[in-house]
Image 1 (cartoon, rainbow, N blue to C red):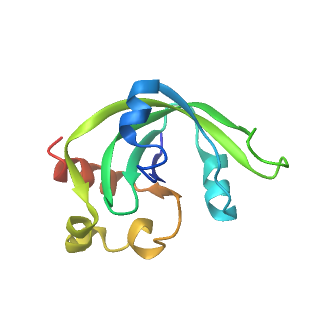
Image 2: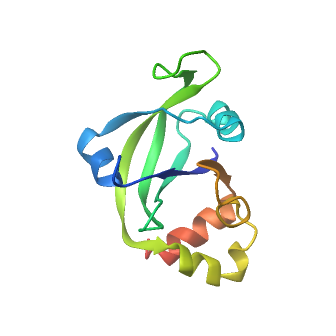
Length: 135
């Protein structure tokens, strides 16, 4: 099993929206590196859902329920989507400033490649982020 972080603008689609839908199609990704990471996602992988924009914090957990398929919102088969099932809201969402203050997280893609919307997270970093969230 792998761990991932996906970013979402909460004004467009928040983690609370995902909780209401229970399962959602994660589409609309138009970055080649992020698309390649979508391709690597496997059923059962765990995903951290991050609110971008003004909130800038990890809000909750989701699980990959369907591996990559052509994004139905795209004009070509170049772009991919996956399906995600909402998990739970974190006890204490982890904000970006707290993540940046933690030296052990200085190399995660969220810090190093901040514009990327889909990224892998190493297991040790995933566990530390959950600990920071009180989980």
